[in-house]
Image (cartoon, rainbow, N blue to C red; front, side, top):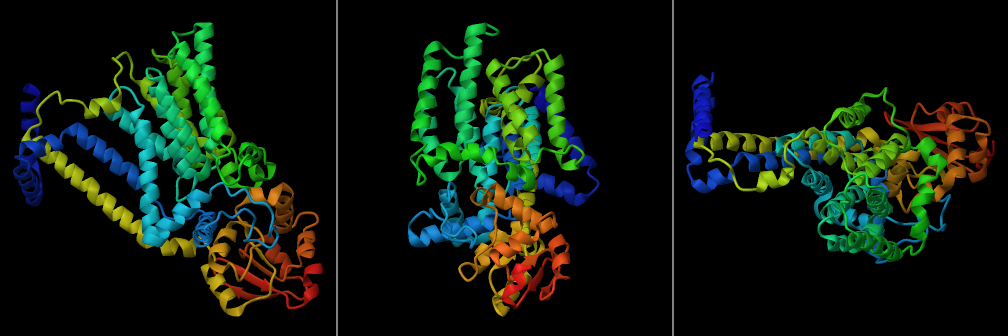
Length: 529
């Protein structure tokens, strides 16, 4: 009761000191509106904290669509829906036409196109913002200790991983990885819940080849459990029967992988992708993080905080947690793409390390559990104002992102150049920029087929190296033009190849705008220089 009187007194004094009469009126009006016991209960500070966290994560996830691969995902989903069959050979490029294509994201593409057809860009933005929000609420559900500190660390983790967010199939992998980690945590006391990972894997393997991450997590958890059981560093968190269940579940997950249109081919595909040298050389999200860049400082700060807390903290993570943490950290240092995966593992461990010697309680349980003190009308009014403010900001932010989408398309993709191509019909074959291939597929297919797009696994390392040699004018740069008989080139104006082709006989610039230059040669032998 003393605490309630203190809160009431402080808020009352705050109301008196508000400099604006309008502000006082708003707060007094809010207090009049929360006189009902049910409303006060709904506006409990802990519940409002969870709602504010949810809205904050949703705002972070509501991002404009700039991923170059989004466009071919959209077209592929449309083709599958219209033909009622999964595309197994490449229909979109002239350089790989008819080649076997591991269409591992087919179900994601169908979902993306279906949402787009029903609600356009705004529907996609809202849907994938909801996916990213759900992912980090699951992460929050695995945190221990002070719920407000856990909320801050969760937002820290979300900001750290935001480079990988967007309207893209990879978001399903992050969501399912978060679900699987939660299942692993809960399986210590209830091993039977591990069997939920089997249907999860069936769905996952049809949405994205990142399903391998789930099996990888299960294997790492088994390694950690075996170390605990055999080397007695800690009392084992899982019983012997639980470890046998985990082994059977891993076998079952491996057994259901072929339940997809590509069959057994999905066993080796993730490994081949990780081993691709060209992808690690030419695709930015596969680069190692450059800590000279400001966008990676949050990741660096999280790693440093983890190292400091492990060194001086009074608590120690379980062996299983350390195994998962070390493995995901190594992958995150190897590739920017995997920073988000590291965050899923690291955030709950950070919260546990920051908890000091206080009793362990799940953060989410503390927020949703019974209240420890009665909330005053003044406190409920303040919470209502905070909630309304966050909800309003979320609405305005999402609406702004949706309205800016056309400008984002014009800023990142050659919309004007493609409109010119539709009108002028320059001759094929067309050499396009790698990052624009997906947009070409969405806008020009089937009238034009692309030279290259974001499906680097389809084109292969050798082809990617030849394209890079031509684009950057390294040794043998004319080979690519000669081999494919290129008649039209659509590239950024600052591309080295554009500067070279401006000097080549027979080549003419027929269009230029802020995004791209279109060069063409009306003579058949131009591609043979």
